[in-house]
Amino acid sequence: MMRVPVALQSLLIQCTAAALVAVGAVFSRSDFAPPLWLLALAQGALAAAMSRAWRQPSWWPPLHLGFLPLAWLAQQVDVASWVYATAFMALLLVYWTTFRTRVPLYLSDRRAWRAVEALLPQTRPFRFIDLGSGLGGMPLYLASRVPQGEFQGTEIAPLPWLISRLRARFHARRVSFVRRDYETIDLSGFDVVFAFLSPAAMPALWQQAQAQMRPGSRFISLSFAVPGREPDQIVSLAEGARHTLYAWEM
Ligand SMILES: C[S@@+](CC[C@H](N)C(=O)[O-])C[C@H]1O[C@@H](n2cnc3c(N)ncnc32)[C@H](O)[C@@H]1O
Image (tube, rainbow, N blue to C red):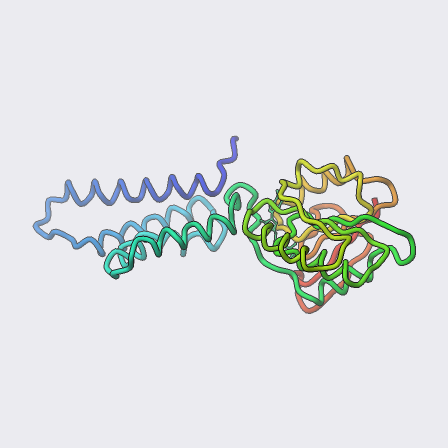
């Protein structure tokens, strides 16, 4: 059966719930004319129920429940339209194609950077890439600490990429950032490939790594394992799987 992307599912759910509530309100035989906020709440409840029935991930039903009621609420508050436009542009520039990649921006911390540093080749020169480099924290940190490495980051979203580029300008050499989808990058040119993405991205990325990475190179994932592939090394950074590094020798 064809898998419908969750963003498209949600659009269908929102539209169907709105259409059903609208039809119900228009054809109701009752004398009671429900106010708009009540209709919005009814639409939200119906959409949340449909989301559960479609077995969407657990964070979707609350989003469906709140979407139209909050849109109604926003209408009641006197906020200039440019505020919405600006917020929308900022979100677009940061999250860009998250609806397709299913990998939003969230940042690794110094604890993870240090743990990755310990997994790098200690003496020989090497090339490192961060797939989905966000604000560039990982490559910038490593470049400042590891002289024998050459560090790169690739980021699909324009604003994080721009910020990482600006940071690199004022930083040490041996670090660069490109704005590219990592799926279009040939991983055979790198000795260490690092990713901090999402569970949704891991199966396809593993296939890409297996097809392209050279024998002896290392693939490291923060927080997200590869389903069905035992890592060669697991480094626990703190309690919980979210703070674990997984490493594979290719
Ligand atoms: C969880 S963040 C990790 C950021 C950074 N690596 C860190 O450790 O702080 C994942 C990043 O990957 C980016 N991303 C998602 N899919 C991508 C793709 N196909 N190509 C390049 N970047 C991508 C997102 O825009 C996001 O900034």
